[in-house]
Amino acid sequence: EEVTRTRSKEWWSDIPELTQDESVARARVYAAVPPDDDPMAFEPFAQTWERILFAWYKHARRVAATTNDIQLALTLRGFTPHSLPELMPKLIARGSFKTLDMFNREAPQGWLSSLWTWGVSKILSSDESPQLRAGPYINVAALQEFASEVLAVHYKNCVSPLDNLTTQEELANHVKIREEDIEILSIYWERQGKAATFTDSGGKKAIKFAPKGVQREPIEVTETDKDIVKLRTVLALLKRQETKLMQSIDRCTSNALDCSRKRQRQQALVHLKQRKRIQAVLDKRVQSAQTLTEIFETIENVKTDAELLETFREAVDTLQEVRRASGVTVEEVDRVMDDIQEVFLDQQEVDDALTTGMAQLAPGDEDEFEKELQALISNPESDTGLIVSPPLSLTSRGQRTGTGTGAQTEPPAIATDQAEALRIEEMTRLMGALPSPSTGYPQQQQQQQQQQQQQQQQQQYRTPPAATTTTTTNRSADRDLEKELEQLAAS
Image 1: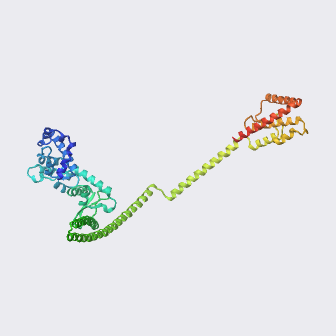
Image 2: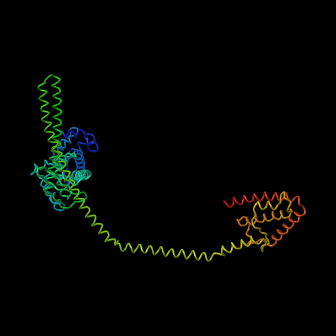
Image 3: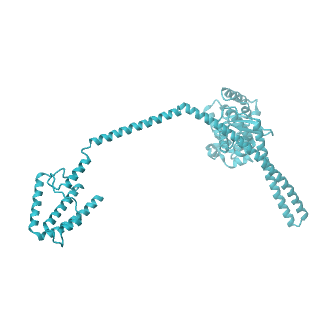
């Protein structure tokens, strides 16, 4: 059935030599084996068969197979490779195949293994060993690939330390490989230092895998390991029994209903009694499985705690070694931090010295400028020839105009407007709108300005009625300038 299933999937569709027409396949693949002394003919023939056989082993998930299995699987379109028994010893000599006997007695890796393979191949090449020609034959490439694949699957599903213990039967069912091939893989892993094979206390063949990343170390199998494997085996057996008993209960229930419909009351009662007995057995199995599961979980927790403690020890040792190698100590850290603090203090002193030096090199003193400004405000006539008056409020300016009182003459009002204009002009200079008086105008411009002011005063004294209009206009302009100054100051 397995061979039929394998052949039905047309695994050979990716091999050109098997997808060609019948005449070419008969001539190149299913022909007789070329002689060894003709390498031009034998080498391509052997390479083709190595690729064909590896593809079949991989597709059928086989590590070892007999000659009859291979011939039956490779009988395609009526062609049978009758020359295969003659070809296999030659492939063994090339190192691509091994017999099961060779594999079981194989020496460790090295020159002894090569010598053993050469000696056995010479024996198989003779006609005196027909029983060995039947196999089974182990495909070396398939053995290596399946060994890596099964290990990867195992470590991927490994969660607790107890998962490294398993029976060959359980592993075969999990990875969908024959139990006979799992046994061959176990021997291969043991030689690679990746697993150890043993028989548990119940007689089951079991495997103990090395922790992930650990190999080439002797893997010790203890009596505890054997007991744990037996416990897992019993738990698996109880699960299978529970499934079988539940199916029996369902069958008894169905039979009782059928008998009841057929008015067969006595038979229906018999089925119900049988269901009750099975239910009692099922309850005992469930209780036993629950107790064993609790024990198994306790063992698993203890194993995990032991591994965690060992990991903590290794981590502490590693940390101490790293600290010793790096030279990081509390004294060294304190010294470095003190050096950093000292460097920051030195930099602060340098910054303070630069700030003090820049202040000393700055031209003039703000206090002197403040005094000079107050002097200009208090002394109406300065050295520059400009008239500066103290600030006047609008209320005092209205009283000096004497609107409606007649107690004061127009000339003082005109003088007040001139003083107000000068005050605004001085404020404008202070805001940066005009050049500072300290820089000074050219002397010619100052004289012209003084002459214009004197002429305006004389005209205002000569034409009193026009002065009132000018005063009103100047006040309106003053208000506008004050608003503009306020806007400038706010911005």
